[in-house]
Length: 104
Image 1 (cartoon, rainbow, N blue to C red):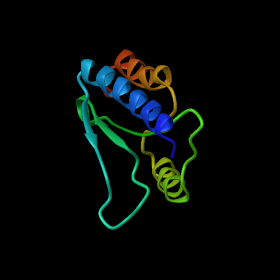
Image 2 (image 1 turned 90 degrees about the vertical axis):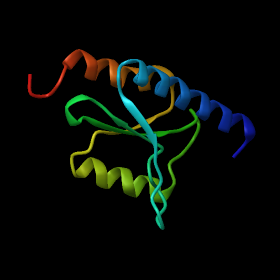
Image 3 (image 1 turned 180 degrees about the vertical axis):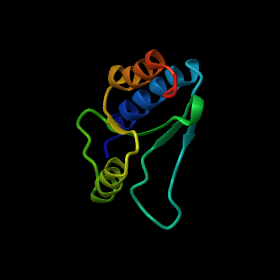
Image 4 (image 1 turned 60 degrees about the vertical axis):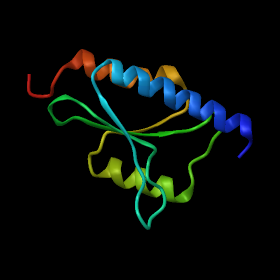
């Protein structure tokens, strides 16, 4: 990975995390023990909401392990995304904030 790519990915991740926190979400950096492919950040919101995001540089590609985990999560109903720009990441939380809790 080129140094510039890591910085762009880190910038995207940091900006989206700041936005989510400002909307009241708890943000955790995650990793699986003894297994590869865990998405980068897990966001815990009101009323048990969970959003899982793998952040990528705009030119970044998912590894085989990341693709496997994300596909399994999506197939099992998890709200999981691959985000490669700040606007897309922020829109996820703006949309959920506009919708309000699921049981309203």
